[in-house]
Image (cartoon, rainbow, N blue to C red; front, top):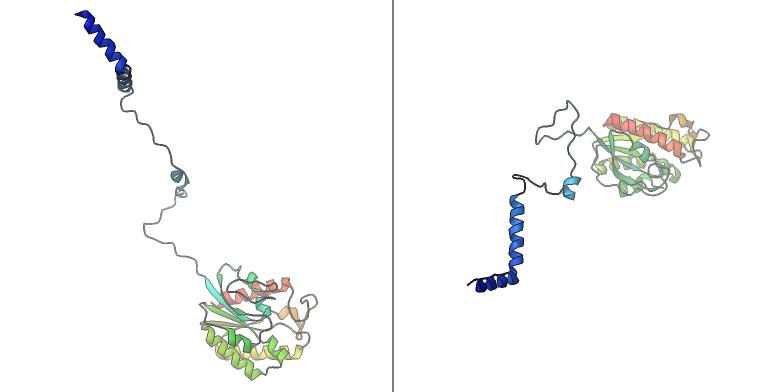
Length: 250
């Protein structure tokens, strides 16, 4: 009776007894592991990239749903010629040409540039044809120097300026004096006087950012490259002065 039993056991071993013993060994190994041991899942890339909020010691976190109010910002728009645009037309809120005062003005911490219309060589008639309504708080108009070159009479310039402001639809207006012109000093001074009077009559602000750069209607030495346009340094200074006027008006 022993011989058949031995034969049966040998047959079982040949048919998978080894796998059975491996399973038993694995089971015992699992049973012998430390009870309650937990393996932490790996940290994903997403978890590593999510920043943790940092709060300064003693700071109070804002209540849920509470937004922090932004600082007051005045949006300004422009209408002008090469003195404003530089030597290439203004493209939206992008100044393409050199010589513009806008880049310096937009550095003012309380101002945001909203665009407008400014093209080299433009007269007030050209500006009236090109200007469109713009979403801004303050409009700066610097216009008229090319009217002098074209021989445009004051009644036309005045009418154009009034219509330009109406077309832009901006509630607050800053009217700037035109810069000196070495070839037309007397006419420049006369036009600036009329611009000041127009601003007063309309309740607009008037600013003359060129005062210390002009001498009886002509440029002070070293402030202009051609007797009409300011140097880059002067343009930057004028931008700062116009920005201050806008901030005060807005």
